Structures are given as structure tokens and as C-alpha cells.
Length: 217
Image (cartoon, rainbow, N blue to C red; front, side, top):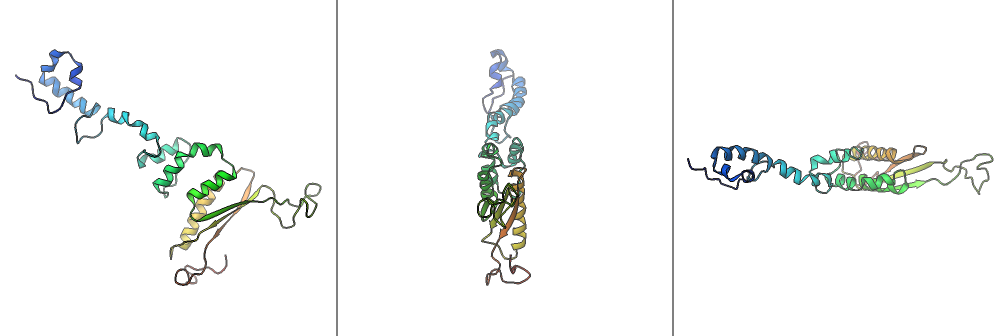
């Protein structure tokens, strides 16, 4: 019985002695394993060899498939928010190790807010000393009446563009994101206040009292 003609090269059969190359049954048998291991046929799922050859891309935030982003973030003990865009997630994961080195610093907090929070933001550290006898007690030198306490800072988020009817929802979402970042990043002994600034009355855009307009802050 003549051997069955192959539509493509049989790689696994080439590793056997030449006497086995004439066995059509063995060729069919090896072809099933070749599809699984080598995957040289078009239109079939990636083979194990192809998956292993491309495994390095899984560890690259820029190239890894979107479904692997959360898994890759888990390697650095970080949980990604599902409502962030894939581009934001990739950018953050790519720099997460460097950010861990600067964790707890003012610079890192500002960078995180710039990545994840919409609008402009300010982080102000309080330098004024509170009134403490024999510690801070000279008015005009090391004490300011009404100044902030030690280890205290203020964060202000300015939301300039808000969609009609989405103002309250957007503000609450940005507030939750900002608080989660600040609580994660700030040193344990510090505390803060968070203020969200936004336009309150804009004729033709935000001007319906009780719906999308607030009088005051």
C-alpha cells in the first residue's frame, strides 16, 4: 500500500528512522500530536509550542492581551479597577515597580492622581505649626493661629467638564477613586482633607436647581 501523500511537512516523523517514514498509519498518528504540539496547520488554535514561544509577551504590559492585565497586576500585589481603560491600566502596570520605590512620597501621590483622576489636582502640605507650649508657641515665628496641624495635607480635585445629568455621579466616582489612591499612598501617620471643585452654574449646561446645579460648594 503506497504511503498517503501529506498536504504539509510532517516534522515529528522526521525525527524517526527512515524506515518509519513509509508507514501511513504512523504518519496519521503523529499528525494529531503535531497539531497539538507544533501547530503548523493554518486555521487551528495555537499549539503548545507557539504558546510557549510567545509567553514573554504575557509579562509585557504593552503587549499582553487585555484579559491578562488583572493577572499581571496581581504579580505586584495590586488590584486594578475594572472601570479604568486598558491604556490607563497598561501605563500604570508598566511603572508600578518604580512607583513602589517612591511609595509614600508627595511626588508619587501627585503622579497617581494625574493618571487616575479626571481634571486638575493640587496636593498641599501644611507647614504651619499648631500651638503647643514649649514646642510651637511663638506667634509669627513658629506658630500660626488657624494654621493646619502637623502631618496634615489637603487634596483638591478640580473637575472642569461635567456631562449634563452626570454631575453628581461623576463627582462621587472621582471622590472614591481619589480617596482610594490617597489612602493607599499616604504614610500611616498622616491625615488629610479632600475637596472636589466643579462649576456650579453654567447657563445652558448646568443651570437646573436641584438637578445639575449646586449653590455654594
